[in-house]
Length: 560
Image (cartoon, helix red, strand yellow):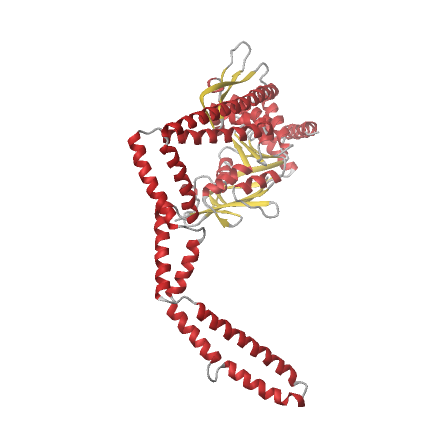
């Protein structure tokens, strides 16, 4: 869930830190106070496009940081996009400067798309933009698949594998669909390439060994000089070995007179042994070393050959050898094209049958889930003052399968008695879409790993009993996951577990927006303002306090 949002130098906000709690967080304030600004700032931290026009003071950096505590499900999803958590938390931040922007996760710089991907895992935002997304039938199938959950996981994995197998055979079939003249040309090319690679007798890892030998041999003279100097210093006349031997003889001759000298004798004996081993090994290195011009030329020529083959057939020797096997298969296919096409046709037919069979199993699961999903959404809509609503999921079969199957799904709805069901995009108004969206969110909530839902303008076009129904629905969702809701309606605000107020004021000739968490009495006073406007009387405050108490009782019942 979102724990804290820190904002500096963004739009009307100079600097503020907003702390969010679990459950239902409500943001209220006068129109124009900056509620949308808060979401805009959060959007930056979630990877939205940076707009320098939103920077309050162009001479300073704009900075936004969002701190999240993550669930095991969110942690697993973040791990899949190479985002790690620390002590159960992840921090997303964005800085907008005069010349550049910087995106970070846990203090490490990342591309903005990575920030966006992490944000999609952590937060679901529902507003007017998402209303439009709901109208696109391309998104309806994804909602049903998410609702089907684990029941669809296995069949969809089989479908993906069947599609890939079919697609690979289709690729081979298309490659085999060539005229004899072109086949003959390809045979010539393949034969030449295969012989060239085979003649080279490449071995995996050989290029690294050759490069190491080349580095050594290309510095042979320097190595020879260094080794010779080392041998002279150790094994030459007056060298280290002779000096240590002389010192050892001198100490050994007097050690019998003082026991303390025996330790020094032992140390020198060890040193003499080490120098002897060193001399032997270094002489062996010189004797075994291939420092001839002929050896250097052989390594250089072999390395040139390997690099030439890598430039033509693959970045590594392993890639070249893998490509060799592919070329052999292709040559075999072209050498007997007619027979190869017969074999491919049989394989392709079998693969297509397997694909269709797997797609049918996926369709069967989807249709069952689609019916259950429609029934669940209809019940939620009934709770939201759609008293005689009809909601259906309709499937159509695509002319050809994709990796996602052969299905297309679309939601149909009738909002009033006697009306025929029509496509969702053709029926609902803005206010109705808000409630439909909320109903779908209530049904789909378990399918999302996001620990925070944000509802922006969910109260568009509603009031009275409908507003109360919406408030209760959001409060029920907030009993399972964190909800942040921007609202103008007192019925929704009364349900808050945490009530945040956004205020605007003029300071030193400039307009500033601030955000603060309200105490219980302050929350009741803000509810009174929402009920009575500028005239907040004792009666209005009493009504607000009563509304707050009723909301508490409703929440306890909903979350029991």
